[in-house]
Image (cartoon, rainbow, N blue to C red):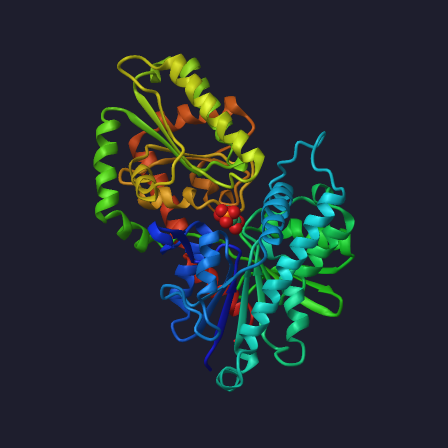
Length: 501
Ligand code: G6P
């Protein structure tokens, strides 16, 4: 039976920039979510009609969206429908609710004596988040039912909708309402890419908001999380805030369903689907000329030294400042490493519309400068910090790392922790936060740290640098095998399987 697979995410698989004279240039990709879904779709649904519904994020995206005609929605060969949501609605939904409140809640980032304050302004922002979700539900319903001709080709039982992430928590329930009757048996899944907060912290949200988010998600048939810990935290919230009936059990079948939630007359499956890497594609990417050029340059820069690498968005949850503080403590307390190591920190810009991110980026630059001033000599630069997006250079750094630092205060999964060992040429020691979702699978072969404990992290850096070559290689090989065991094709295939045959 022919399938129609609809993906919905805030950021889509293509984004636009204005060139000279107002021309539009499209760029593929951008971020772990998009690359995971893209490669998952390519692998598992060659026969299906695929359509990706996303938001126009910039003026150039809006201009591109305006060029689309109903029925022929493709942008640069990608079957995408880009929604031109009114700018104030989009900004409030994306920056003020999704990035400033939901992201902060689930990563537990609030400075609680001062933040958050839920007043009238927040209620206005929340209304925008609702409208934004309505816009997605409306577009998805249109894509699901299609025109009459298409509906005969694809019966509604063969329609699968894969909704992504915290931007779109309300969309499953809203879509369910719209499909009732005409396409009531379409399958809806939602995947949550970040952690889920413990119930006591989740209750920071206003009562009506915390309940609406849970209720929205429970409009889906299947909900996915990266690891058991986030899934169980979500289930705890369903029990304590909604009094939903939760049946936790052993994992059923290959699709990884670990619980069922009964609420408002419906049953929703909750599953764990870790998103790892497509190891063959990633290794093939490093053979391209741009990565090879960075490899040569970096080999020269790091010649004769042990290389400590981190690659992150400049993101509060990534804990870059404490990571650098740990490096400073290493150099201060274990002077034998001075002149013998180089720390490369590639932190690419992110969410600069949110004030906390701008301040954090400044903090990162400041501590980096302090380290250079304190320990640098005419012969030795201890640290190379670059706040710039350069994917090929990041791949090269991962390939050459002796030590890879991934120390987030909280992280849904973390792709770098998985990419590093897969790319590593000589084997790398992975220093990994116990608060990253990836710790659930990679923990045994990594050096786990408490991300708040700078001294413990400094000691782990020392241990990683001093690790015998054979141990480093065997740990790294074990990590690479685990990362490659959950490729995007499996991640996406298991979610589709959970929606039924
Ligand atoms: C990270 C998170 C995803 C999230 C994405 C959004 O990749 O892991 O959960 O959807 O950021 O990033 P953006 O740059 O689109 O705000």
